[in-house]
Image (tube, rainbow, N blue to C red; front, side, top):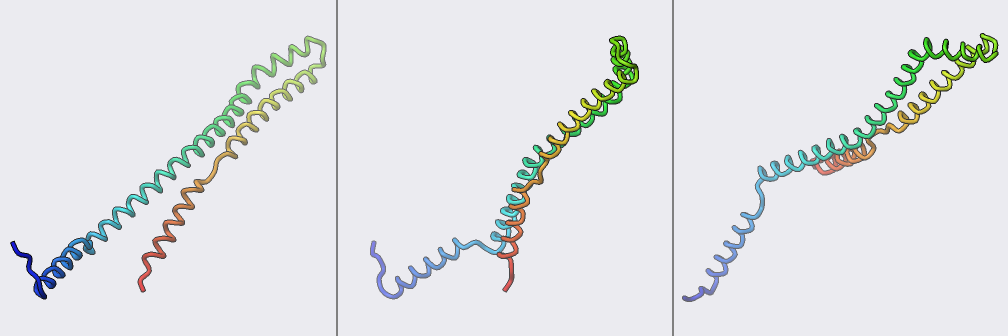
Length: 150
């Protein structure tokens, strides 16, 4: 078998290389499909990151609300029973009746205050999804910078 030489062989070789290069370049439709798939992946990643960050914040908010609820429940249920029983017990020890009731009321206010402080601490741990916001802004800036027509 002989290998062709000369101008015809060079032209045939160049034509084959040129057609291979064109076959390797993606079409506009392929580029649009790829961009759409990548954008969808980016958006799914942003949503997943937001879910992760918000899960912790929602948990802290729920626990804080639970402590506030506990403070209310303690106040509502403890007043009728504990105030009378404890105050009468202090009166039996020898304190004036009005002082006995005042001491019991102060003790319950102390309990309510402790529950409220615990609730405030938990609610203060609630944070905005900072990483999600930052990556979202970066994505928007990137898309704006790379999609300008000019």
